[in-house]
Each structure stands twice: as structure tokens, then as C-alpha cells.
Length: 436
Ligand SMILES: *Cc1c(COP(=O)(O)O)cnc(C)c1O
Image (tube, rainbow, N blue to C red; front, side, top):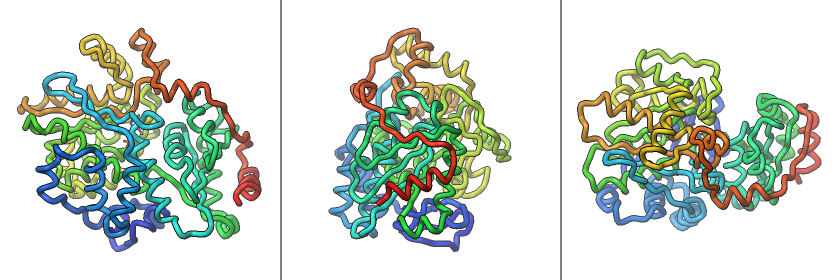
């Protein structure tokens, strides 16, 4: 698979380079030059395939030229280890639950697949690879769990002390093995700048092989394409036009949906569902893209004012506002509406949404009101397990919610981390002493 940069279509690279580099040198985003279409028999046989078989079919079509079939099978068996079921809420609404991974959010799909693919491309290297990640919470946990015990790869995570939730902190600090957590007594921005300085440090880079596990890494999008097919498979029998409602922040998830459609998945329409950070819905109604500082909300994994995948979405939709409007509708909701939706769905359907999924639900309902075609079936992506936001959800619903066993175990786990001042010299010295 050849990839180009969204800033310069002439800048080309292969999958291996795109994955290890993360970002093109011109600061664009990597995009596949060609998106392959799945063979017709794949779609007609879809209902007979397991999730892993679907995943393998897509992986082979997408990257079969760079990774041999047997290796791809190993990668999929290691990465796609939990289901993505569709729960039926009413006659025209399904919920695609993407939270059965180790950190209870859909980011586990991307992180685990990236870890497996990086491990494959890293085979044969004599020197180990070190992944540096600065995190404000969620991404770091998914990356840490994804890379846990991956041979030849070490992960160093920097997080701002006191600024991640207790559960998130445990997810970062209790794994051990090849994962190190550094608790920075500073802000997320300081963590990020320490990581950036390490990448710019020529002397350090001569000593160690460093890479990032950024959320815009192309390898994280590929497994997200797979669960759109898996979701579609479960509702295709009803022969209705399918609409996906995607709770969005950086818009990686929705970008993956657009790729799935290019590969031949018969999606009728997409809905860009956001909280008060409404840069994309505002663009869809006005044609003007105005990035803004992010606003804090209860669906905090979507608090993004300048969505990094927007350039990819434009390229996938044909590069104009009109084309994007044809494929995507955008709706934004505030925290009051989100809380009301959670309460409504709980009291009428006895279903517990987390705040992110609730935004997706609101957007689907809003879309349903606006269309003349009342036959469409909506699949709302539920991006996190409600227990991940337990305090918030329990207060909103005034009830106790059950904890998945993974979280219960995590609460008992021991926290091991390295406290550090927000100074690059401290980080550098630690790396010099600990990366061998
Ligand atoms: C990251 C995240 C999102 C936003 O996904 P994007 O791909 O950045 O749009 C939504 N919900 C949850 C729970 C997340 O962790």
C-alpha cells in the first residue's frame, strides 16, 4: 500500500514507513493512495463470517501486499480478541458496543492492531524500539495495554499528575513488564513538550530507536474500518438504509467509517455527533472550518476544537463542502442535553449510555426528525463502557452501575510509576539510564 501526505500528494511512502513515522515530514496526514474495494462475494457472504474472518478479509485486501497472509492471521488473532455486538434499542436503532477491550473504549481496537503490526515490522531489528507517548488519559491506557508484553518494543508514557482519573491512572501505572509510566508534576502540554524534545534530540536518536503511537497513525484506522463491517453484518437482514452515528472528537472513528464505505460497505449516511466542541457540525452547516480552543464537557474524550482527521475526511469525501454534506450530517449537543438523553434512555429502555454514546444517540434522533425517509436504521457507536465514567454516570442516573471485572481487578492493582519534574533534562537522563 502506497500512502501520500494530505499536504502534498506527491510525497509518497510505504506502510512500514508511515507507521513508524506517524506523521509525514510536511505535517500532513498519511492517506492510502488507493482504497481497495472488497470483492462482491465478501459482502454477500458477510453474514456467515465471524468478526475475525471479516477483520482478516479486510486486512488482506488493505495490506496483504506488505504483510504475508500467515502473519496477518497472527496479527488479527492477537488484536481482535473481543466482540463488537449490536444491541437493539428500538425498531430503528441499534447500538454498536465497542467497549469490550482491556481499557473499555474503542481505542483498544486501534492500539492493539498498531502494536501487532509494529511488532511485525520490527522483527529482525536488533535494537529494541521505544514508543514515547504523552497522554491526557485515554490514549495512553489503550496504547499501554495494546503493547503490553510485545517483544522488542518498550513503551514510556508521560502523564500529568492529578489530572487523569483514578481508573485511568491505574491503567497507565499497573501494567509493568515493557511499560513504564512517568508521573509528571506539570500539565499535559508539558508532557507533550518533553516528548517532542526527545524526538528532536539528535544525540538521543542516535542512541535509541524512538517512535510515537499517535492517534493519527494510519495503522489505528485500519481496525476501526473492520467493526463498521461487523456492525453492518448484524443488521443487514432488515434491508433498510443504514446510518452510522459517530460520537466524535478527533474524527478518526468517522474517518474509518468513510474508508469502510469506499471499500464497498453500503452505508446510506454518516452522522458527525459532537458535544459543545462543534467545529465539524458548524463546518457542515456553514462551509467554513474554524478551529477553536477546546471546551470542557462530560464527554471529555471528545473535547477537541481542532479535529486532526478533518483533512482526511475532506480527501475521502471529494474535497468540497457540498460533497461532504452529501455523506455526513453534523449535530452538536451540550451537557444538559447529554444528561437528559442518558436519563431518558435509561428510564424508557433500561439501557445505560456513557456520555459519549449518549451524544451519538441524540444526533441519531435529531437526524431521524429531519429526514423524510423514515425507514432508515441507525447504528449508534457506543465508544466507551459507562463504568469508565462511573461517578458521572451514577450521579446522572441516580443508580449504581455494575463494574466489569477488568475494572474491579484494576482498582486493586498496585501503582508503579516514576515521579518527575516537568523538565526535559530529567526525562533525558531517565531515558539514558533506563533504555538499554
Ligand atoms: C477518543 C474517543 C472518542 C472520539 O473519537 P475520535 O476518533 O477522536 O473522533 C469518543 N469517545 C470515546 C470514549 C473516546 O475515547
